[in-house]
Length: 219
Image (tube, rainbow, N blue to C red; front, side, top):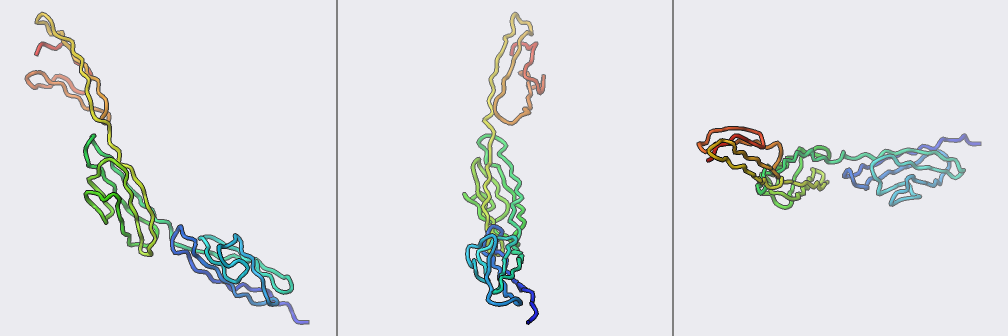
């Protein structure tokens, strides 16, 4: 009686090309046991189930059960590796005043395989093909970051603008040459806190950062 020889998987693999791709492969070339062998891959691959090579694999671990002619079997894990995901590491600066076009998006890509190329849509006033888009008006922008392996990811950003700054002024008139006048302002829009400066007819500052002033003379 010949001695039993343990089944050995003798595996190899190829990595996925991009972090979100499922194009890895796992291959086994078993020895030992008694040929022929059957193969059961888990999770089930998109190609190659029941064969020595599984294809269309995502990054992670795939397990193959190899069974020989005597119904002896082993489970063998194969690791499918791949690059890390591309990350944008974006800093977005919104518009400072309504109607302005001074927003910006600054990228510092990582992951994947450097170096990177960047394509912006719509085309910004400044920075197409670079990691810095400036002079942006309010709206939505998409940066497509591609790495040296040809992997690409789209990142979407929104440049916001504040509501237009508006003032509603109410005035209490001075009477009988007595300085009992007053004024109150209601501010809407813009980006709080608001800086407020009150001046008299000569241009001199009489109050700051308050919504109301009193004891005003005619003028």
